[in-house]
Image (tube, rainbow, N blue to C red):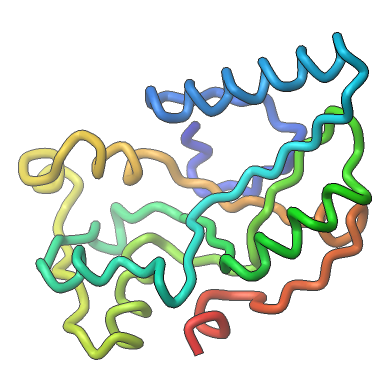
Length: 176
């Protein structure tokens, strides 16, 4: 759920406000219950904002889809596809039973800054910035749902418990 841009660890109780978030939390709970019941080790990687060369928002940027102005913007979290693959392999060997891990990089980007950075990398104009009120009138409910939650995920566990060293510690390095 929305945490007002605060840092969030895996131990913070989930409070999803969107249907997408509620489905994710329900899925985690079902997996954990199944793992506890069957004795199977279930390790959950929470992977937000997966990006890679073939997973960039080209169409959105080319279409000129707006982003929120800085004073209304939300923090988002990202992970490069290569780092996520490495984390998956490592979690199979070292992941704790019924343990969650925030599978994200070290970045602290707002959504608008992420789109501006990607646009610059692709040689496209940055997205126009609009107010939250204008976004509610112009954008789809699905797109708005991504703009309604602001949090910065702590990735301490992937580093200390899994011993993972990020190949791409932030989006700018991943885009390069």
